[in-house]
Amino acid sequence: MYSLKGQIAIITGGARGIGEGICEIFCNAGATVALWDILDLGKETADRISSNSGSVFFQKVDVTDNKSVGNAVEKIISKYGKIDILINNAGVIRDRSFLKMSPEEWNTVINVNLNSLYITTKAVLPHMREAGYGRIISASSINGYQGAFGQANYAATKAGVSGFTRALCKEVGRFGVTVNAVAPGFIKSEMSDSMPEEIIKAAIEQIPVKRIGTTEDMGYCYLFLASKEAGFVTGITLHANGGSMPM
Ligand code: NAD
Image 1: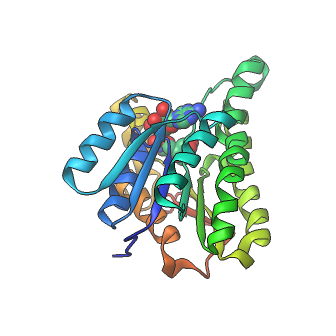
Image 2: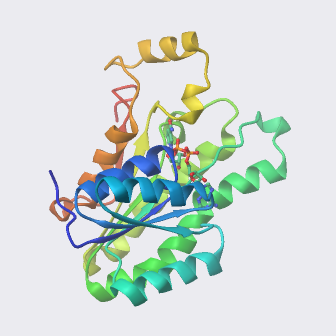
């Protein structure tokens, strides 16, 4: 297993779902994790993970808000003096067919899923450059590549995440910083749990490995890209979808 011992990681949207899975796996690997979320549930999640294995603390942060992000980064730097890993996982959906999509539905998704990368990365990158080391990994999606009905806003952001990743890696490789993305396929989450059983069954039938992905599957993808050993891997989007759309 890859070790993150002694490393400081920020995981956005860590209160539940895939973010919670990443927090858990990073803690097991020895990292100290700052769990960022707008939900107070983040405190419960952090306490639960800490009591089991690792070192994780909750910071209530809105990734669309410069001030909120800046304050949280300052606190981490004043306590630990560095940030090794930034996981841009927070994301939202506001699905609606394009002709009916409101400006609010468009802008919310663009702000949370894409504009936030400008805010968080801008706040963290100077510290990584100074340290000569860093790992930045962001959440793309299979739907950023294949598209999905009612997700023009979401797909635009997730394709944008992969473009951001390909471009930024060219600027920061010389500082020892790698930039990658993970594009999950169909993952078990609160969202998938609320779908009718026959729809889930039919969806799984279409996946070559014949099962739904887990938050643990995703956590290990992030762990590899966050490891020191992945230093020659940068600018990629790791497609983790059970073969649904081989890239
Ligand atoms: P989720 O809704 O369960 O978790 C997202 C978390 O982000 C929540 O805890 C939420 O409170 C937090 N968040 C939302 N807005 C925020 C903000 N402004 N500031 C801080 N935190 C905020 O979602 P998930 O299914 O765990 O997905 C995680 C990421 O993976 C998302 O970016 C999503 O688009 C992507 N993804 C998920 C799937 C899937 O099948 N679950 C598939 C492809 C991509």
